[in-house]
Amino acid sequence: MPIKSLFMPEWKVYYLDNDSESIQGADKYVKSKKYWFFRYDTQNLFDVDVIDCRLYREFQMKYLNFYLTQSISCYSKSSKYNIFISHGFKSAAMFSMLCKVLNNKKCHYIFDVGCVNGARNNSKYFMLYRKALESNCFLISHTKCQLDFYKNNLSLVNDPIYIPFGVDTEYFHPKGIEKKEYILSFGNSLRDYNTLLKSWSKINSHTELHLVGASPVRNKYSKNIKVFPRMTIVDLMRKIEESLFVIIPLPVQNYSCGQMSVLQSMSMGTPVVVTKVPSTVDYIEDGNGAIFVKPYDSSDMYDKIKYMLNNENRIELASKARRFVIDNCNEKNMAKQIFDYVISTCS
Image (cartoon, rainbow, N blue to C red; front, side, top):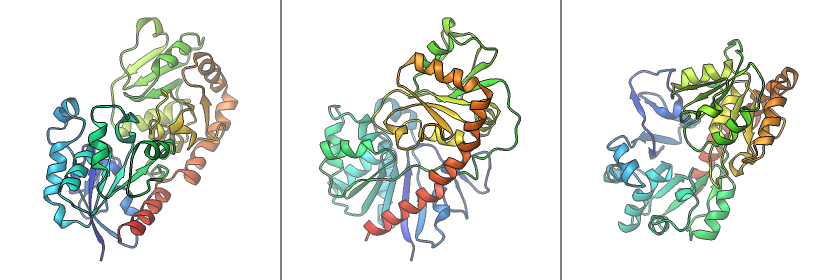
């Protein structure tokens, strides 16, 4: 009999009667189809329901550091399920506390993208979170450095595990769109656009820099720059494939950031320049579809942009990008590791 599972994501999910290719897998729950990476569950190990955090989400994002309404709603239905799976600590924190206080010993798996609370052990929320994690929680990290934080700051009943993030390479694939004369950078949080723009101001090229989802660019850095608002995933994929290459400039954070953007771009066959930070060193081989740039180093960023503006260098990297993701960071491998881990620990 399948394990009755409740999945609790910290983002809005579209509940659909019919599938839509304009929405990526994690963002849709389609009737009669398996949710997200559970589509690789060919043995029917799991029976998964999804409850997202849409109710009062913006208010709770602004005034709380967790999704209270989602946690209460999910806990009120908890008797129907054998295990619980949270993606993101905002969806896990209060649910874990309810399990702790009410002595609910069912297994709760947490994909901890932000390392509990941004890897900060001195925040006003951290003591609450640490107490909540005394319930029967299993932490899953997509970044190895988080394991050290857990070891040094938490007293967990169950050992956390590192499982690499994987991309749906069937969804993120090149469609034969012709390249245009621009470089792309995208993302509206956890981006070091200051370093990128400082470097770009010294680039003497007719090539444009397109920024999607970024804050408005200051005038002194506006040479050959176009800024676009956030766009649909379909439009973003088109821009990724059209671009000569993608730049993902990242700040140094001891938790997951930028991995999806880098790997999805590479899966589209587009080479990437990305900052070498804790969340990317686990994934990227320098020169194998992507190249590293030093954190906050505008001179190194300038050199890497110049290198990538060379057509031969760029084509060589592009030829390796998609194959690297297929071989090393695909969604099916991620799913298998998750299934193996859950089956081995939930009994």
